[in-house]
Length: 386
Image (cartoon, rainbow, N blue to C red; front, side, top):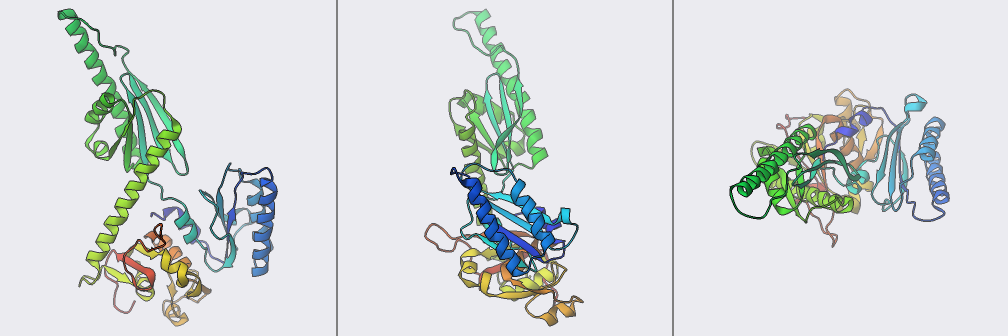
């Protein structure tokens, strides 16, 4: 999971207020319930020591955000430093209410629950194709695919029945028209795939039109193509959204399988490109050596995430198990934070990716076996004594 969107947040000195709210609007009294939920969260923050300026900034954010119909969650993160108008650093809607609503005031933001509950966004392009052209869509995090453009080519698209040279010539013209229309549409798709970094291309329409389009696509887009069996006609947004979501889930599953395989192959090798356990991962983060952090959220929920703390400093990657380790780096400890919160902040600040492994349907771990429920793949070996 790319944490680039959190880098600016993690660069701001703490402390931080982090709020996870049930923001559902599926009842007649939803607005009143929202007010009560926010009031309770505010009381918790105030009791934990949050300052008045930060609370006022969160008041404004809680009151003015657009309401999402149906069940939803929301996460708000505000820094306790900086100008009043810049305190709220993150405001995101979650697809479901949080399992455990919370409001914390701590040296680092509590970001892992958001990353676990919000589906990983996979850039995708979707196409509805027919004999005259089609429509091209791009995926949007948390929303239905948005139409980018319509492509309409030649209108000579219907073959005629009969025999003779004139009919044969007409059929050849129709087939050539189909090929041109598919080529025009494919060109638009290729450009959008390149511009968005798409990981999947969902193609829907009648079978012949799908086949012609995929044949006309460039090699990159063609490799990413996933066909949806349907007969064409007007785009059904719900159907298209479901198809894109399913294809994106398949990409995430494949990526995680590949990551587990990479980690298991790297574990124990002499080149030192994998570490496990809290101490080893923290040392790698302090050295800027981490490529990807792996977190077993089954294990974290069982204890280490809330029961074990580590020492943190204003520099996000300066995180250690003892204050003396931080002072050796020239940093003065600013407090203690839950392991998962400190790991997530350090990973985001250092440009590392993070992959949480949630439980399966029976509550069992889905990730590799890791000491302390945490491991990391490295860009280079950790220097001795880091």
